Image (spheres, rainbow, N blue to C red):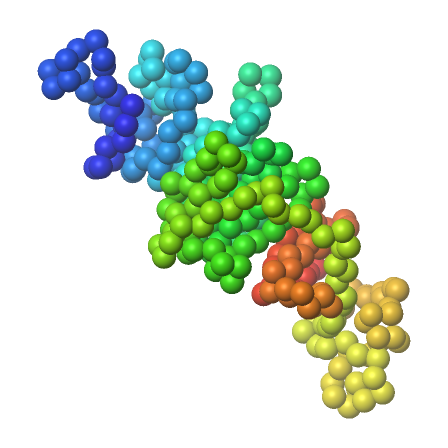
Length: 289
């Protein structure tokens, strides 16, 4: 199997001499056939499932090609696929221009969920090291995601990486990861990465109520601030009535080792269903009633 420069999937029949009629068949999008490939048909990755099924990632989404019936099963539509790979435990990692999906097989069927990455980046490649961590290449840099504790590390040119520009990353037999870039090749030994034992604790640096700064200072009312009884860092409780519709909290890390590299997560209980991931450039949690 192979991809066609003009879009579509090429299938070579080895029973026939290459070049003879019927030795190659091209499968592409067909508006009149609901089992044809998702348009536009530009392929970004292929992974075999078994002898009768082939995973295909394209600019139209993710689908399963059935060899016997020569049909496409549309799994994820209207998402531009950018990479496709398989994990050590059989997972399918579907990279897109707006984030990464992980598919796990349950009761004979794959269920896909989106991995929570800051700002849903353009995924170029996904590798997995010997202890199961995902190394996720993006146009912005490289994420190391540990699914055991949901920890996330971001590396880019500031850390010495080449600018990642392609999906052809690979792992050597020694376990080294090779990431080609537009200005060089990055070689990473994943097992040399160690995690610091102390956690970084963020502090609240600013609170706004209805877009007005909240302050405990006696000068606050003169400056047009929203009056609160204590500083935001020592405030245990603040009740707002129904007239206040919006509040936002800005936060920061006091660790100066690599402040730009610090990643944050926040959650408003009863409002957010899960933790919200963000980075050092977006250190604000805003909510509106």
